[in-house]
Image (cartoon, rainbow over all chains, first blue to last red; front, side, top):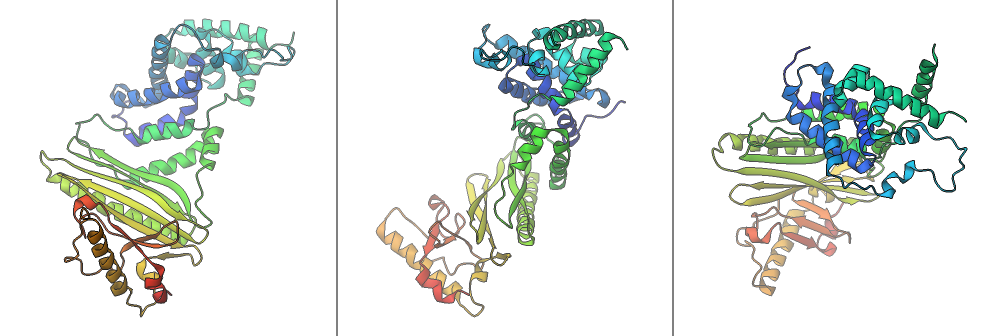
Length: 162
Length: 280
């Protein structure tokens, strides 16, 4: 559906409706809460400035997610190549942790490689379609399917009882 | 159902049961970001309207608790100011066209008839300020003007509530002025200065005399202090006031009204013995 440029109230309402998906996506890529919140904030501002480029309201979610994903990738590029242990501590097994204790799904997702996490998060947590994920991540639908397949296989190994 | 489909269902079910933890302040940050959105500087745009902003805020308060447990938790932390005065939300109005700029943020109160009455008064007052600002902008040409309005809770005890609304208008120079709104929590009534005193009490003359006395006393004690005692005739019957932390009555005057701008907004603490017999 073609439409005129979104006004601020409509834009804000759409953002708020999708705020959890935005955080999930940023967190999946960046791991850090603070970086994820920063990226979401930057994406909202950029999207508002460029809202004339959104031609169809019903494409708002993948359109905004694409902007967010690019912000996240920018953040990754700016980051130093090492990672503070503190940032990933919650996803590492504690030394005293009972190895038979089940991982939460989110711990398992965060143990996946970076290229799989966002696709898996958007598919399982936020219910996006393959096509929407393709638009959000800027990759082909075939690539999304491949990532989901690889992610699913790794999650099975991590989560299923031995 | 093949094995992958079954595992997909398990993953979806676990994702539903084990939501991703979201920081408590996240929803608030998203809202604040949205509320602060504006078109690029220099691009003339229409004024926002209070009603639209208020509607957006209302929509948030309805939508967010359904959307996010974290957001609901954050909203539950909205401070409650007292038994009959609650902060419902803040209302913001901003404008910037490169010459005129405004940033008006005031609270919306609820919880009692008195709190809502104060809220209505604040709304009417800020509407008036914004209306004047808009009219000024129409004739501004290449000049500059700004309007900033903020607020603060001065007193919030078991028996008394005072909200202060501070405004600054800037053209060639700045002009500061304030309004104080009071609620007597014991009676549930909105109170102005006249409401403190008996109907037959000539409090205006008494308080005016004390203000004049203090003006002259201060000028005699410090050569750098300056007031306009010869221009001061009397306080306004509804002069701005508040009670300080010691419970003393403080009269407040807008900038330039009784002193040069360098004196800011003069305040005078009125000793209780001056007016005690006039109280209700």
